[in-house]
Length: 106
Image (cartoon, rainbow, N blue to C red; front, top):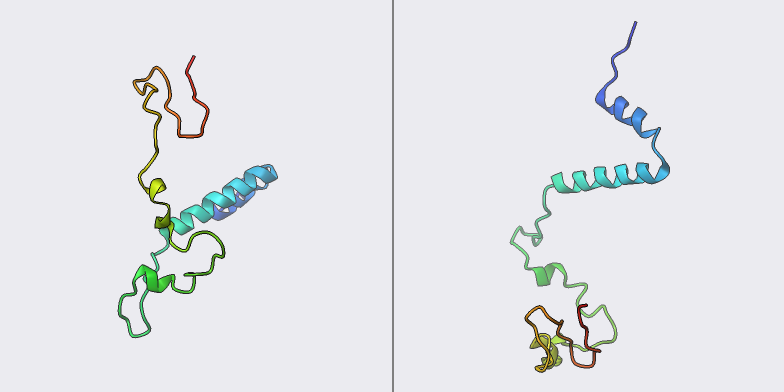
């Protein structure tokens, strides 16, 4: 008499025949699906009021040592990439950032 296997048993049986790398890929995919189906966590105060992103990440503020205290201190960076005005950006050559060697497409 042939027994009927559940879907879980069929999946488990097939996974046994895969290499370790493939089994890891299957596990990663299953974890991705579980995370995708999970309900998003709502950040709230103990009394039920909504919590801002700053309040939710409050324990992380100031936890990184070094670097500027405020990323806006580098005003030139905030202006975006600076291109050399002598180079073409019409597709015949690639513009370079200051201090980079110029690149050309052959």
